[in-house]
Image (cartoon, rainbow, N blue to C red):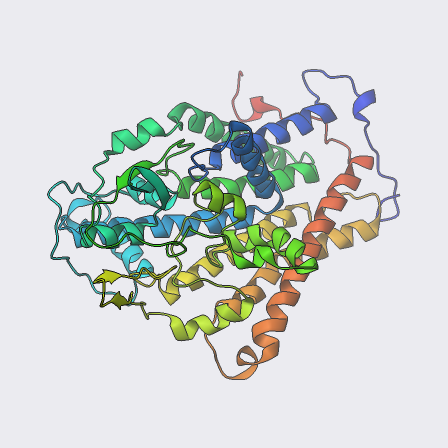
Length: 486
């Protein structure tokens, strides 16, 4: 019985023989599966793996990231936006430090360049360094991405020491402890395994999928909930794909940077990617809980979280590779970050050895409070977009009226809850509710719980919908209406 008291006619895929004017349930699942795989596999641009990691370990890590894309595409979009902003900031920083021409004079989009610079460094002034390497070549977004994804490995006495962050690399270059890496864009692309053909095929698959859904809407043909969910995930995944457009893909090895400075080399546990996060060593249930939540924390930009395997392999965290002003350990750190924004930390100097004690997780230029809020904003709005697209199933013919109400409520919660998370985590300390415990802690945590619960409800209802699909769902689009004589 339908929600209006009438019977709902259903079609069974097994009893519906395929023809030129119909499709089967397997056709629907295959179309959605191919679209999701094309989007996820093409969009993911992993960081550079460890030097001694096996191919099987690299493959399974990519599969896990793909699963995360399908479960929480909004987190992947947040991660991509973090890396994009960080890559631009490094590009600008190196070009300004070593005498490249101003971006406004050399790029085709000066206003976009200026806007991204203000976003990345809202409180910083452009400055130049006294030391200018003769071999310096203008840095591009590709080089910026390459640096943040673990592209530069420091060698000391011909032995690998650690992967350098761009800030550490820039500091060592200024001190003449290492040479400026002379690596051309063609060399980076040669290390990358991305190609235009695979990107074009993925884009074609997504465009074809969207055209089919649009045509079905125009011809008043029903759309399954699986197709709506696929569309939502594909839109967010491809947004991340375009943010990573210039990021090298599947690079297998870093560029070697040799230590040549007279000062003592950085000691143990002084560089960003030296040691695993201490929270992995906790005893009790908190140890296992942290293993579950740290990928989400890392993708959301909540600090450089090194796992034991990443530290042993001397690589960037799988979901890391972006600029942070300081390491974040708890939600309260995010709240206290307002007090730290715009305050770069200087590295102390050892007067006896005249060498610099390199402070771990020191950022030479603050990432900027506005950038952090923008990151929270991107994550929140992408979550709201995910919920908004699921509202396309508002009038779907469920088998029970309660299921219809649940779908509507879950879609609204997914569209609205991220705004409350953004309000609590991304705002400065203000008077009233936003400055209280309720506004700064309870509301974001409770809104996150509601969002995750709504996502689970959406998935369950999507699976239950295959028990009884509405009539016409197996009918195919009549393309002759749009293209006569086809």
